[in-house]
Length: 348
Image 1 (cartoon, rainbow, N blue to C red):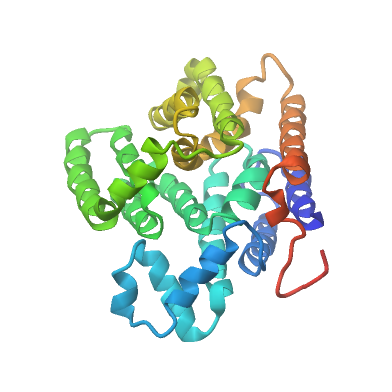
Image 2: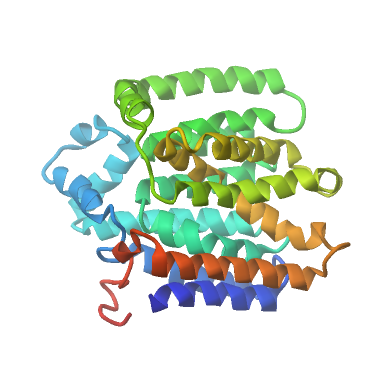
């Protein structure tokens, strides 16, 4: 598990050195980003869904492109088909996903008040557990964060394009497409009229054939996920913080309308997680960026009550605790430990 601690402690160090500067030590973003990409992309037998992802790849051996694209999650099938053509194996798919996710995460983090702190917050669960365990949904979240960097600049159409691409990798990303409606500025009805046909078309193409199965499995059978309440709680806490500091947030930042809805979704998830924990857990993964945004702004928001440096140390300690508890006591952490990599096998 040493590699996981190296990942986290690198970002702790950069948080303490880099502070709230978005540009200082610029080359460090590339070096650390590359390191994380290699850790994500060339991991071997890491994550409990590893065999499932190998199965996706192997089923496309000898398939034509049209056959691949007719299957569920067509963009994911395309990348598997392409890597089959190139002979890169599932590692090629993971490498592509690692690049997409890290670009999205870094772009998103660099828009925050304390960018390195945002990266550190992302590491224990979003990167290590989600991205290195649930590859499709991990890269979809990376695309969502990348899309958010455009949405916060008023680029609604670009946001929609990224989210449609994300939904073609993992259909659950469809739920985040309507978020673009709540962009500040004029053109609400235009955005609404754009979103409705896109969501409907994507739903018909990506989801309608599997809706009955998903409803039966996730809702009627009440499929349960161990630890779902804890993971939902991790979004619930920053959601409450956002509402507590809503006046200051509105004065200092222009994106309250967007994060209001994600915070509301996080609170609703906490209320219903006991009914169908797996369904709520999967949807709540898209709310994880609220942790990065709120906690990277909290040192500033709480500055009149607590010194910013104290807040930073507290957040880092809390996420170090999350990593320690998950690695040592989580039910499925054995799927991540020991970490293996095809480039540096047996080193960790």
